[in-house]
Image (cartoon, rainbow, N blue to C red):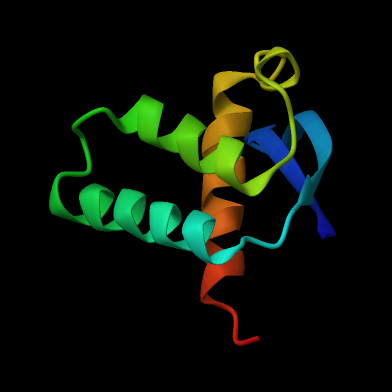
Length: 90
């Protein structure tokens, strides 16, 4: 596991900052993540919000109650960070 910082901004003003701990995916979780990303690449607008939350849920150990405290913009910011993290060489 390692921590990342997500920041949501409105122009230069920081609206929210959150430290998020990402977990290391096991093989089954990695397959689920890749399936979600293939689906996203094929049709990015279909069920977009659900897919973003599913990716965030998959990569963290947060409960639904904890994730429900996230602002919508924080989900999308975290999704972007996860995509970048997943493409880094290991």
